[in-house]
Length: 335
Ligand code: SAH
Image (cartoon, rainbow, N blue to C red; front, top):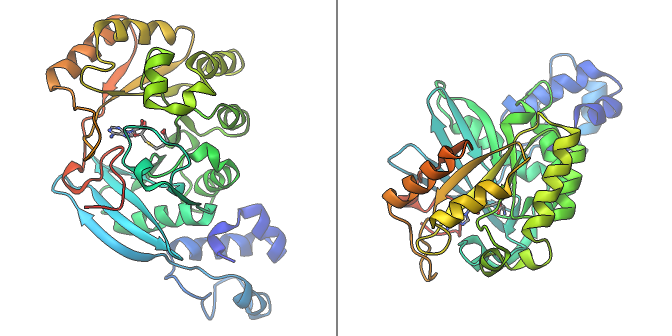
C-alpha cells in the first residue's frame, strides 16, 4: 500500500503515535521514492520494520516530459499501465499543478481532447497526490507549488471518494499543507457529486458552464440533458444561503460563433444572479479534428468587458503551454 494514500489520523492509528505519523509523512513528501528508509528519526526499528512490507512509496514511471517556452511543463506519467498527464504552471513566486483524476474521462464533452481517448480507469487518491509530489520536485525554489487544480484529465466528481481523499491529503500537515481554497476541483457539472463536494469539502469549486442555454450546453456537453443549467446553478444558489462567503469559479470556454455573442454575455451574468462566483473565460484551445474554432482576441476581450461592465468579476485564462498541447482541454497523450 502506498504511504501517500494515508491521512495523518490513519497513520497515527497505525503507528500508535502522532509524532511517528508526522515523521513518516515528512519522509513521504521529501524522501526518495522506493522502500521505507533503514532508519527514520523518531521511529524505532520495532515500529518501522513490520511496516516495510506493507507501506512503500511507489513512483510513477515518467513516460514523457514536455517543457514549453512559457515555463509550463507537461509530463505524461504511467501508473501501472494507465497513462495520465499533469502540468506544472509556474507564475510569479508560486506554481500551480494541474492534475488528472482519471486516465481518459467518463464524460464526452464534444470540444475536449481528453474525451477522444474514452475512459480507461479512475485514479486512486495516491496517484493524484503523486502528481503533486513530482511537480513539487520539478518546481523552482523561487516558485514553489502553492496551488493544485483538478483540471487535467478526467471528471473528478465521477471519482469523488478518491478525489476527496486526495484533497484531504494535500491540505494536511506536515506536508504539503496547501490551503483548502488553493485546491480547486473542476467539474463538468455532475450534480450529485457537486452537492456532496460542497457539503463535505472546503476546497474550491470550479464549474465548467461553457454555455448560457440548455440547447447550447447540451450540444457541447451531452450530460447537460441529465443535469441542466438550472439544476446546477440552483445547487450553488442554495449553498450560498448556507455559506454566503464561499466563492466559486465559473469556467466559460469561448468558442467562435457558438457562445460568444453579446446576448450570451448578458445571459451569463443573469444566470449567476445570487451566486458568489467569479468567471474565468477560457478561449477555446483548438483540438485537431474537432469542428470548433478559437475566438479572436478582440472578441474574447469584448465578451469579458461586457461581463465586467455588469459588475461580475471576470478574468481571461489566456492559454499556457499550447505549443506542447498542455493547455486546457488539450491533454490527450500527444505532443
Ligand atoms: N472534467 C472537469 C475537469 C477537466 S477540464 C471539467 O470539465 O471541469 C478543465 C477545463 O478545461 C474545463 O473548464 C473545460 O471546460 C476546459 N476545456 C476542455 N476542453 C477545452 C478546450 N479545447 N479549450 C479550452 N478549454 C477547454
